[in-house]
Amino acid sequence: MSQVEESVEVDVPVHTAYNQWTQFETFPEFMGGVERIEQRSDTLTHWVTSVGGVKREFDARITEQVPDERVAWTTVEGEARQAGVVTFHRLADARTKVMLQMEFDPDGLAETVGDKLGLVRKQITGDLGRFKTFIEERGGQETGAWRGQV
Image (cartoon, rainbow, N blue to C red; front, side, top):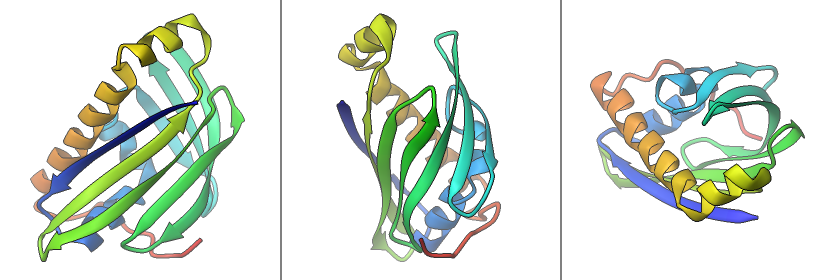
């Protein structure tokens, strides 16, 4: 398994960053390679991705969700094997550090080479940067919120 850890500081309150992150169906608006996400239940999402011409579908289960603190997941079925956690850290009233930690299992030669070249880390760094732009350009107005706990 490979691991990556990246973070970004966003100029919104912690509850705003967290609320937006719980809106999984908006991920294609800021995550490269994510074509579609369907929220199938409070704890199950279905992902369709296309990275480097390789299309994948998989289901991910939310294993832990604590409002304003963390969202953890693991894949449970499909063409990808990964697990991770996103944590939210209050830096000031209107500033939050969003940290993503992920483990993944590259599949095949192309993904293994891409991992060794740091392409996954670059993708995650870009996704977090686009998340920052997405939420800040909305004036700190999240598209929705799910405040339940898992």
